[in-house]
Length: 374
Ligand SMILES: Cc1ncc(COP(=O)(O)O)c(C=O)c1O
Image 1: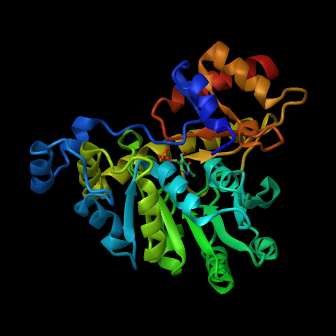
Image 2: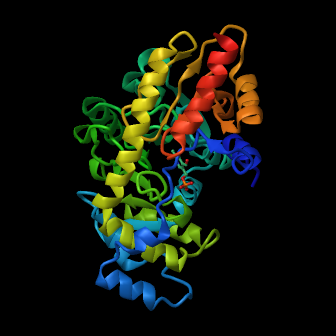
């Protein structure tokens, strides 16, 4: 299999552990292990203390699948398949779904695996481009026009990385109805679900919305547990899940035993875990609102509706975001992620607001902008 390099991950491989402040991370400040274990109930504490480090059930720990199913309306534990992160879930699902002659439509800019795995599998991919001028909104009619007889899959990531876009309920209904009518599967990458700034905006999960809906979820973002590497697929299409499960025999076979138990702990204590995430993200977003309001001569800012990332644009004449970000990383130890890493033009950059060092990182960014460009 030949697959193009993952531009964003290559960038992080170069910089993530070489800078002091990641002002572009998409995850939320990792939950401290001791604090997480303190949330365990009697059953999960006993599972943790008595854990034997053998192979685990390939489909996922039964209690973990049950907790994950509880995040949905129409999903039972048997409709859940656990993976090593959302990344593995996407890789396995798309690999079994698509091949030469198939067509997929993928919202873009996008986390690269959402379209690159499809291309590597030999499928033809149409990128459904989102635009800043539209507030990054989905255009369901344009998407409808892109559907062909050989279209097998529509891929939407919402809440969206990198823009923070979240469709309205009406847009989402139109999209899910379109997929149902056309008989195509919907891959809904919902890794940032539960990070809606207004809970009334939370969408019906893809797996709940239609029989051919497949939800991708993960503990890395809203649940602040990226180090566990626990993700999943949820779908009522049992035949498709079975094929993805068989493909997993060639990737990880099963999940890490300690990670599964910690995942059960986190999901059972989800109100506490999510409250911490919302406190971090909410405080950081208020700082970003002020920062961008005061520097509207240097940046354009579409406020995200959900998630832990946004995709502003540098508007300083004669300065590219790539040069600006490289300078910022070298001189201030603060990392931004240029839009070029998404292949997206126009001096955008991803800013992440899930980390607790954001106030310091933002001060350094502020200092550079004010010193050099004002
Ligand atoms: C939209 C999206 N999908 C999938 C992933 C992969 O998640 P994980 O690294 O937790 O497997 C990410 C990570 O940034 C993401 O933003």
